[in-house]
Image (cartoon, rainbow, N blue to C red; front, side, top):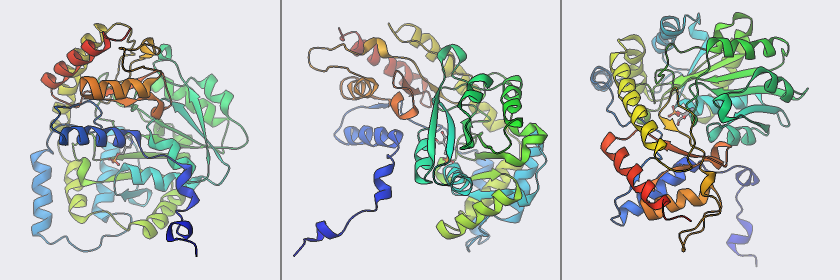
Length: 403
Ligand SMILES: Cc1ncc(COP(=O)(O)O)c(C=O)c1O
C-alpha cells in the first residue's frame, strides 16, 4: 500500500516559483527576536508611521455605518470615481470608473494584470533590480521573465537602446516600478519619453507601470508613463494605499487600464477573492480625495533619513551606492566582502552577507539576489533614525571583522 505522503502531492506549479525573500527575512528576524535577541529590522517594506487620523476616522465611520456586505468585485463606484479624481489631480490623467479595478493590495492588482495579459511562453521584460514578486508572478502565469541588467552608473534605469535590444516577437509585457523598489531610482519625463519612443515602434507590448511609491519621491514631481497618450491603451498603472498613506495592513491596490484589461482583471478577481474589504474601500475614498499633507510629511521624514543613511554608508569600507531618489531603500553593492571571512563565517555572496548581518550584527536586510542583482543588498530606512544609526554602527563593526 502506498503511504499518504506518496499519493498526496502538491501541484507542480508550486515548484516553479519562490516565496518572497523579503517576507523570509522578516520571518527570520521575528524568530530571532522571539528568542530574546534585539534585532533591528532594516528588511522592512512598509512605512513605520501610523495611518493619517482622518483616514482612520473614515474607516471607523464605515464600520458604524454598516458597510459590512460583499462589495462589487471591481470596487465601490464612489471609490473608482475617487481613484479617477486622484489620477486627474496628481497626474493629470483622464480615466473613467470603467478603467479602474480595486484589489486586495497592489500585489493582487499586479497578479491580476499579469494573468490578464501574459500567455504561456510570452516574454516579459523586467529591468533589474526589480521587486521580488514580479518575476515570480510571471512564472505563475507561465510567461518567461526576461531580466535586463542595469548599472549603478545609469542609476539602475533601463535605457531606450537596451530596452530595444531585448524586444523579440515574443515580447508581450514590460514591467517596471518608478520610484523603484529596491534601487530607489525615479524616471524623469525625458527618460520615460525615451522608452515611450521604443514602445511606439512595438505596438504589441503592454506596459505595467508600478507607481506604488509615487508620493515617496525626493526629487520633485512624479512622472507616469501613462502621460503619453498614444500608449495609454497599453499601459496598466498599479498603485494603492500601502506606501504613500502608511496603510499596508488595510490591503488596497488598484489598476488604471484600458476597458478590456480592466474587465479581464475583474473577471479573474471575481473567481479569486471578489471585492476587497468594505471598510478599507470607504477609508480609501477619503485617502484619495483629501489633503496629502500627512503623506508629504512622511516623505519629508524619509528624506531626512535618506540624507543620514547616505552619510552612514559613505563610512562603510567597500560599499558603493547610487543615491535613492524615491521609495525608502538603499541598495549598495557589497561584493567587496565576497570571499572574506571572520574566521567562523565565510561570505561567498549577498545571501551569506545578509545572514552574517542578521546572526552576528542582529540587523535584518534582504539579499540583492532576490531583486535580480546578486552584488547588492537592500536596506530599508523605514525605521527610526536612532534605530538606523544603531544598525549601521553594528553593521560597520561586524564588517570590520571580515578579512
Ligand atoms: C514595488 C512594489 N509594488 C507593489 C507592492 C505591493 O504593495 P501592496 O501592499 O499594496 O500589495 C510593493 C510592496 O512592497 C512594492 O514594493
